Length: 345
Image 1 (cartoon, one colour):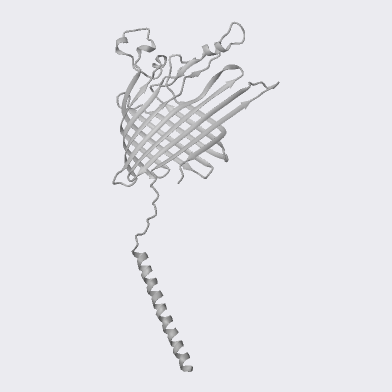
Image 2: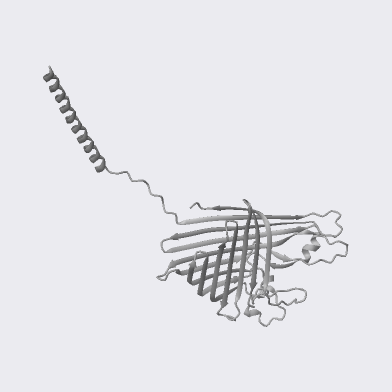
């Protein structure tokens, strides 16, 4: 009996070892089959070449007075700002585009008319391609600048019937600029230097462009040339001046963008232009500065300045009816609603 039991135990042991060998062999064959099977490739994310952003800013101010001994006037001010960017980068090439629009007006109870306080359209397009030198790119730079509609200075009208009427105020205002009056467009070829992410310098020794003044009344004030067929006229009229002026020269543009922290940002741009064709020593200067301070999630404090010197532009006033040349300065300090949409990283 013991022999039978012993033989049975050996038989089961042998069967177990044989079965274990089969299982191991099957597992090895399955692993080999899985390894040889074609692997499913996971879809790769598409490369993103474009980054886009849109910032909108709306500011409103009101002054209300009732029986105020010190005097004053009820007034309302509303201004808006749009800053849209679309930038492309692929390999050695970049293409940056930016559109800025400023617009705003003032209504004062003592003048029954809307008075413009801000109006500007500024579009920039910058293309660059890497050179063998680090941080240096071949570049082409296009700019276009004008305004949306007419801008005026508002004098005090004289009225024989007492308080001036709305029409009296409209008749007393003096036109200063308008849509395409003037408009500046330039195209420059040169080099773009970007030593830091926050700074760029564009030097364009070959820059051509047009100054357009569509409104006849404004052509003399913006330096348009007198048409040759009217050279002998003594009583000069606006239509006698040419509508456009071609300029060929050199341009230098410096841009800096400082982010102090998540809530404070400062941008500045300086543009210098020399016209080879007329008085190249007299530089045209445009210097823009803007400070954004985020007070809360959707509210910002904005401080901006625009400084211009252009020796072709004549500034007229009561003391200088024939016009004179000087620096032009515009400054704004605003608190309002701001919202930004940007591409996801």
